Image 1 (cartoon, rainbow, N blue to C red):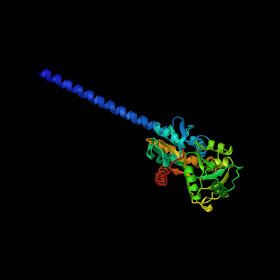
Image 2 (cartoon, rainbow, N blue to C red; image 1 turned 90 degrees about the vertical axis):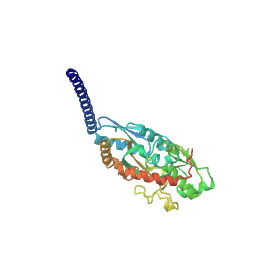
Image 3 (tube, rainbow, N blue to C red; image 1 turned 45 degrees about the vertical axis):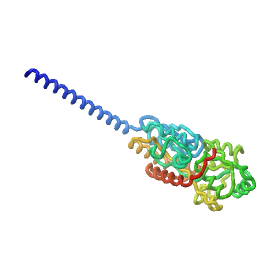
Image 4 (cartoon, rainbow, N blue to C red; image 1 turned 30 degrees about the vertical axis):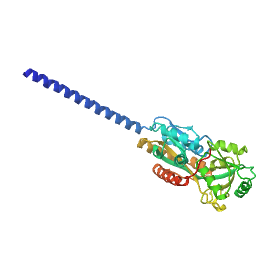
Length: 333
């Protein structure tokens, strides 16, 4: 009897010992994982970072993102590799960013329409809450431009011709539902004219066709206007740009058309807060670097840096604003 009791106690002690060992092993494993995660965060980035640009090469977002990538690399101590994934007004690249692992090694450079206007017009596989916001890197008003040898020398010339030849003029943008497209729709409505929309995947190809006389008018950013010496007919800002003082605003020409395009850096939802802080600091340094500022100036754009939290707030405000403006608007195909 005594021997049996001793055997039972011995078995119980053994099981308790095993449980304690299991708990200790689990605790040790958890501690190791936490230490490893902390070490990884502390050493971030330990390798190159991919920057998905949601437009093809040659446009505003691509141009400034490449310069910013170079400047941020200096702060991070690792290269940033630019990967262009354009199409559908930036939604293809933006969707690609949302699908990536939130490990800090894939970030995205986007223009605001992919998150603030296009989701009201098309079904997209993401929402505003699918991302972490790192910083805003630019904000530029929409420009209406024509090729240097165009017969149109003013906004009045375009309006006069369009009224005499309804639907014969065409205009290009980077896609249906983008802010340049909305600016064009706004202008045509106020001017009581009709032009045919020709959508493109990015600014580069649109300008090639503009210069090749395949399209008559382009609504886009100052990046391509400055780079290709395009004739600027009007700017959709409240006042004339310091960088282009001779270009009149739509407002002073009688049309209340004010539209600006924002661009910024985002990351997949769930990015570690420490990695996000590192990227945010590098972005702030990059957008304030002499190289980046001189690039903005050459593109007739002014600095427009916002922190990640500020950028997120502005994007949510723009999303709500666009919802009201886009009611009843059917995108061109």
